[in-house]
View 1 (cartoon, helix red, strand yellow):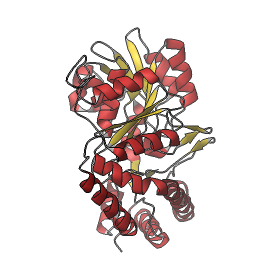
View 2 (spheres, rainbow, N blue to C red):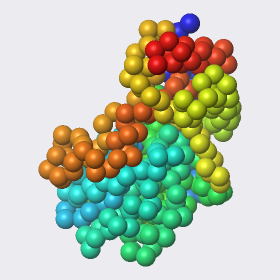
View 3 (cartoon, one colour):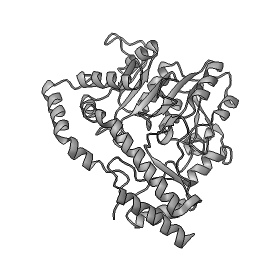
View 4 (cartoon, rainbow, N blue to C red):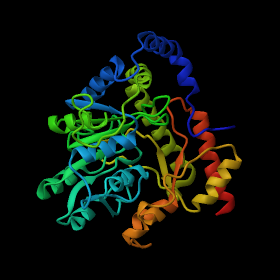
Amino acid sequence: MNVPMLDLSEQYEQLKPEIMRVLDEVMRSSRFILGDYVKKMEAEIAAYSRAKHGIGCGNGSDAIHIALQAAGVGPGDEVITTSFTFFATAGAIARLGAKPVFVDIDPVTFNIDPAQIEAAVTEKTKAIIPVHLYGQMADMEAIAAIAKRHGLVVIEDAAQAIGAKYHGKCVGELGTAATYSFFPTKNLGAYGDGGMIITNDDELAEKCRVIRVHGSKPKYYHHVLGYNSRLDEMQAAILSVKFPHLDRWTEQRRQHATTYTRLLQEAVGDLVVTPKEVEGRYHVFHQYTIRVPKRDELQAFLREQGIATMVYYPLPLHLQPVFASLGYKEGQLPEAEKAAKEALSLPMFPELKEEQQQYVVEKIAEFYRHFV
């Protein structure tokens, strides 16, 4: 049996007539830049997130960059974030001339540990970027309290967490702003790049809108250095077809997570550490990520059995060569470094079949029976 990490083909076949219809509509309208579908998705995703504003961007990385710039982050500032995440989070900080300050993670959730944040605050600190990794929100009440004490901006990196909740609060409700990615692999994915900033801050929203169009307002009059980073109209049209299905897909992901956890506990017990949904948090399971001994050997074995897996992420950001000048050394952030050696994400998508999950778990159990 072959089990892919992600398979969008069944989803596409189900949605194909409607997708073809909206793409034809865009083509016939000849409105390809910041058209009606972009406005529609900005409004709908903002409302979904209980935010006043949605600002569509070219991709999730730009969304972080633009939100930080709009919040006034620039050269000489420091921004505290997690070391265990995708590069875009810290890349956006560094490209603004600011300094990423990496802190360790909570080993249970893989998210930034609020207990580590306050000790990292200095007079240069301007913002905190918590990342809601794998689909579960970070401890936002604790982070928001720290930010309030020190007058800091909080930009939530929710690239993997659209629809997630924290004690009933949506992504973005406890921060200054939040950013989404619509990369094709995401829970709400386009058929190319796309991103969005959501916020309840009127001034920040307006600055983001200006920055995404070369810093121009009115057109051809430039008061800030901006970028060309707009959500594409055709991608917005595709998102408009997929968006009504998001909550159903999320529930399917959650059901798959429950199935994985049950099967793994029955097959291997405590040998594999399964994801924990913290009380009061609604996990959308962008990834189902386990912690395992002999991770690399297990991944190679599963590949031989036709099972795709992914390692998110094999090298923490504080040890990346591009950030060597920051002076971090191995051993400084032990939980992030340990997670990078143990974390393995299993196939996860709404259309995943239970027999596929059973096969994955059978092969995991086989590996540990014969090779450990």
